[in-house]
Length: 330
Ligand SMILES: [Mn+2]
Image 1 (cartoon, rainbow, N blue to C red):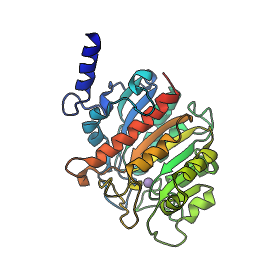
Image 2: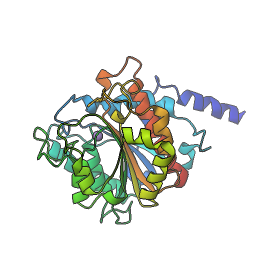
Image 3: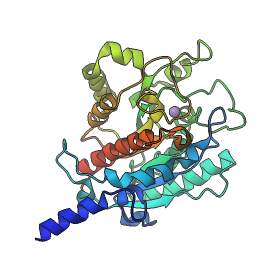
Image 4: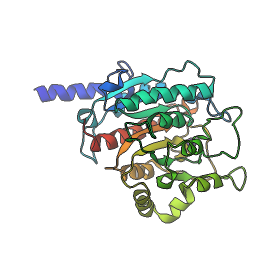
């Protein structure tokens, strides 16, 4: 009977349209010391000065649907919610949201407290500039999550975001286009053991991608992925990253626009990833020392009526949560 009640409760917990919309219906508790995995909203959108700016609405959109994602992981055979203490920590305070540089500082300070508490963050943005603030907070010499090491990146994106060949994007310096560069220069990311995967589309100048190669990143474009095949790409990811502290950053624009239409910086000319392709890539880092992850560039205001892109964001977050819970039982 108690099993039956338990199952009834779990069924009710996964109904998305009632109750308080926390991320994955996790308890809301702002203290990172109470969580092994902290789910965090980063409603910031002034780091992307060039395109649509409603990315700050992303965390709320995922909160609205994500109770339905409170599932067990079939392939891993785990219940992440029971293996770890997973809480919704709330949002990074956006007191200076229209000032990108100040906000990146605020994000950094916030995430330092997360790392100090040994809490592994899984965040929902927000534009991609948030990853700069997050990694300044949780990686590098001061970090308890990496034991003072730099983080390695598994960076899925249509764009490299390492464009230091321009000083600023319409005034944003630590912008959505700059983070992958300044984190290397600042000692937070180890490019020699990081992968940028899924880059596609025509660029603005022919040397546009060179900054990534110059920094030392391994870049696998989407056409290169297609030519190599998933197995070879997964082998490369494993070799490059090893068991170093790994951070996964997932720009939804790496997915094809038919799969995830509600994104900014949409790349329509070359086919992007399907959801199974990215799921298999994400699951390939199972067992690695994942310190956290983020999902960025959700644009709820241009999503489909049934909010498919919010569901994709939720699905990717679920894989990240399950990957961390699988190795780091609370
Ligand atoms: Mn990006």
